[in-house]
Length: 353
Image (cartoon, rainbow, N blue to C red):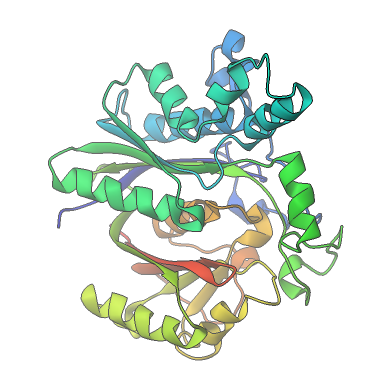
């Protein structure tokens, strides 16, 4: 195993996260059940004539990757690896609607070309002039984690600078279907916070987070990526055992974890996966939640990773992210745990440098 340093990060989300001067201490909890991304100034990162032809997912991905590369002082990476659970959803919906409206005839290829899941990675590469390794992983709620694993393998094989990230967007038709089957909360507002609800579903949102992973530390380093693992299905009673084994494999124990970043989203049917850890194995560990700020989407764990990177670099956790009263003065090891509707469980382990 090699060394994997996160030397640049970029984020576009439902918060003002694309502005690197924006303090995450000022983030406000989402208050509606469907929340679109806060649009950054696309003209800073994309040629104006190109913006009109790009989907929201592509624009988010290009901006987030541009910010990450700029922070890492890299012009062209050795590889571009993207995770996306649903791809460019709006263009997929548009293409399928055209099939129905035109009786499967006289279809223009534009919407289909833009709808493929690898469109974001391809557009990032075209903008950079990067002809290196470029792959997109579509593994539902572990798409980002799978991308991280591939990035680590690339560094093990001798590459030195990898651009890796996750991106997903809201689709209007898909959102309606999600509401019908209780994937999205029926409530339209959350005055007491979404994590305090006792109902089915989550807040549906979108976003893009990209990271530059390198084999050497730099003056811009946020954190060191120690390990990533994921599982398709686990029983609630299995999560603790898998976590302890994961830490043991990385020569760590629970007391050595300074903070845990949890993917709680307020879904009464599935938040117990987290609460079992909160109340037992991790009861003496400082706990952080983030989906009250980002919303839920297939690669939302990338937003959690972005938050963890900020915590490790700044050695501070804003009180609006804390969900227990445990206090820490410094942060060395941070663990992330995410799952979605009882499936696609993942652990990511980061450390300070």
